[in-house]
Image 1: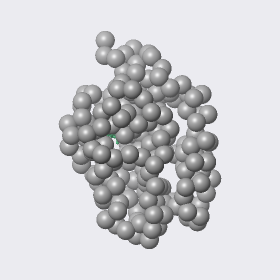
Image 2 (image 1 turned 120 degrees about the horizontal axis):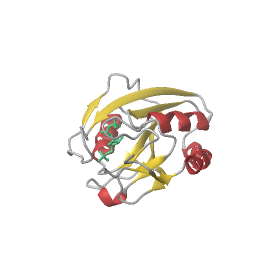
Image 3 (image 1 turned 60 degrees about the vertical axis):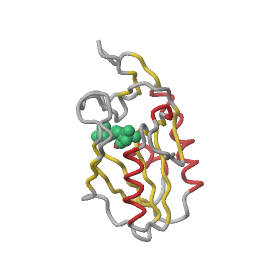
Image 4 (image 1 turned 90 degrees about the horizontal axis):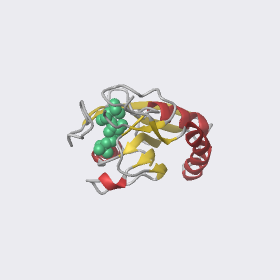
Length: 173
Ligand code: PRP
């Protein structure tokens, strides 16, 4: 299949998770946290990280779409906030699977800040700095990667591969 090459193994992901959770926990203020995941890509990493945090947490979701079909970003981001939950006055942790051009994260952070959280921390599983078009970073990064189109562990190509337990390089045949 066109996604045979493993870039980050299941073992590497599962080993990194508790260390990343400890980093995030150390940076978050004490008390309840509202964890916001960007659908759909963040869902698998987000749930694993949320559980690894082992703290009093609520969940919210944003639906973002920027890629459409295929492997190239269109640079357009649409965000649906219907299931975001209350942000004002709360300590918020934003989670996404990958920081690529940065358009999705930048727009999402603007939306969250406009709702006046008490604090906002950000975490991504993967950072692909070579592709950045917006000057933005995540507070916590699981893995920095080269400029590969990757699938698995939440990431898709035309909605396929999201449930793979590892991250693979997608190379069309
Ligand atoms: C992907 C990914 C990030 C975003 C990153 O989402 O999950 O949210 O693109 O790209 P950017 O930094 O260039 O904006 P996508 O829009 O493909 O939706 P999905 O999460 O439902 O797969």
